[in-house]
Structure formats: structure tokens, C-alpha cells
Image (cartoon, rainbow, N blue to C red; front, side, top):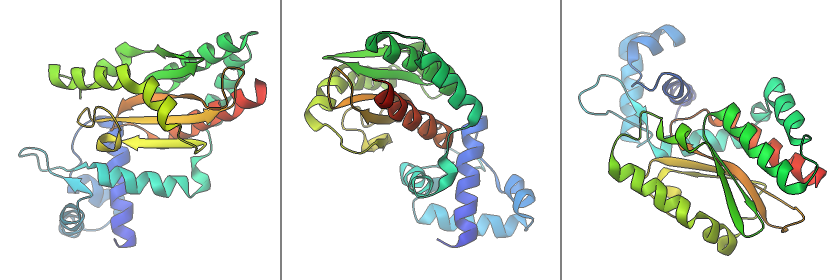
Length: 232
């Protein structure tokens, strides 16, 4: 992938996250100050490599799971994934509202829901606390009963999977088909591991459509896990 193709992929992912509509070459040509034909050639190459695809007969393109993975890997290796200050302050303030560990974790999940507009979740002992289900099913991606069923299946099996698999990374991102359960649900799971009075492998995170602002969500989830571990 050339440097400009990487930039075009990033622009498609971030624009698509914002407007939930395929991104066309005319918009990108203005952003990068090159001709639409040049952008179309780069988009065709990105599509050939499997990073973007053309839905239906639309002239625009949307990212694939492979495209999102490339983007997330780049974010993970840069300082640009630092939390937004306002979001970080709001999260920290709500986290300290709870005197008991369980209350602090619930407050943190509820705040993640407000800040990311995704479903929020955390393990508290042997239970999975979930908040913001209407956020998830209110997204335009989830219009079919099959998709809703896939998401429900993932949530039903998520707590036992976390207990058995016990991901060890401070921050883990599972995109679309990478999810261990509900692979065709078109959702991304962003989770942070932290130590708590309940377990050395407690988890907090969000579940949202693959179309989301990974930069903000990853930053906030990572901050939530780190701060909870320091508090508890």
C-alpha cells in the first residue's frame, strides 16, 4: 500500500464512521487535492487488495474487516490514540463517584455508553454487566432479524468466552469476523483487561458496529481499564 493509499483508506474509514454512507472519489479528490481519476485508481487498488469494497451499485466504497484491521494496527502503534481530554475527564469523574468496586465499574460502563454511543460491558465477578443495548440496535447496520440474533448469540456467550480465553493484552480489538462468537454480526468488540477485587482478569469494554470511531473508542476503553485498576 502506498502512503497515499494508506491516507485514502484512513479517510474512507473515518468518513464512513461519521456519515454511515459509502465514500466517493469526488469527496476524496478535494481532500487530497488530486484528480478524481487518481483517487479512483487508488481506490480500485485498495479494493483489489481487499481493504475496501463497493456495496451494491453505489459509486462509493466502504471498509472491509481487513481495512479496519490495518487502520486499528496503525492506531495501536502511534501516540495519536491518546484519549480526548474532555472524554477522559468525564470518564474519570464518573468512575470516582462509586465508593464500592461494583458501583465504580458500573458507573464506568454507563459513561462509556454515553461517550461512545456503543453498548458497554464489564465483568463483575462471574457476571457480565451490560448497558446501552438500545444504542447498538439503534444503529443503521442492524436492520435484519438475523443480525440481531447474531449479536444476541455473541452477548449470551461472551462472559464464558472471556473466562476461558482470558485475553492478556491491556487492550484487545476484535473486528467483525475476528469475533470468537457471532462472526457475521458485523460488530467490533473493544475490551481492556484490568485487575479488580473480583478477579485478576476483569474486563471492561464496548461492543458496536464495525463502523465506529476506533480512535476515540480505543482511547476511552484503554483509559477506563487503566484507571479502574489504579482505583481498585
